[in-house]
Image (cartoon, rainbow, N blue to C red; front, side, top):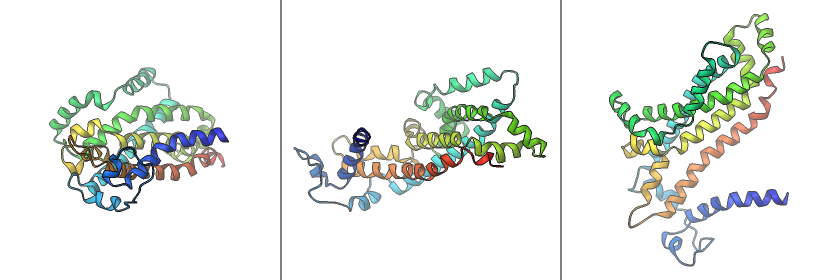
Length: 266
């Protein structure tokens, strides 16, 4: 138990530093020696940061939410049928397809961002949410397919056959029988995709040029200048950016264990 508290403390200390830093004034943050707790608590930092001239922070938050949510939904729509089909059926080129999916996981948006920019420019969707939704979905699809493929493969085929004998169609077998059984894999894919899209920086910096379209990861850099930096806002935006991810974990964590047996009750 002591070791657990020690590990938790190590991981929580950086977040506490950010929290206390967001409640300090700029001179106090820069003073030497530094203070751990604020001498004066500036809760108004969380109000004033939304109207700073550096970036339209409310629009940045909306942009981040829209891109992350729709990228995650797109990944699930494509990955669930693909993972189910590759796990249940043997078809020519199946191993080559799975290997290709694995290879794409080795690529990152930062490596291909120049090519992606030119491609989106040709399509006329540069500086749009759609471009970043496609980028985040594409680069997280491989992991989602692989993780859900292993979960679908672990479900005995006899479960599908029993449902089909009872008159269930293929889509019914997938959504009514298999999905509850592989819910932990789906949860893993949702968390991985959402967090990766929420934190994506390099492609957003290049593809999104309008300040209001940029996500929080890019907006955060606007508070750090060459000669002056608003560190209290940097810490404040960082805390705000963490909250939705914590909420996602809190919502999904309750459903994680329940999904292990929900589909096999009948």
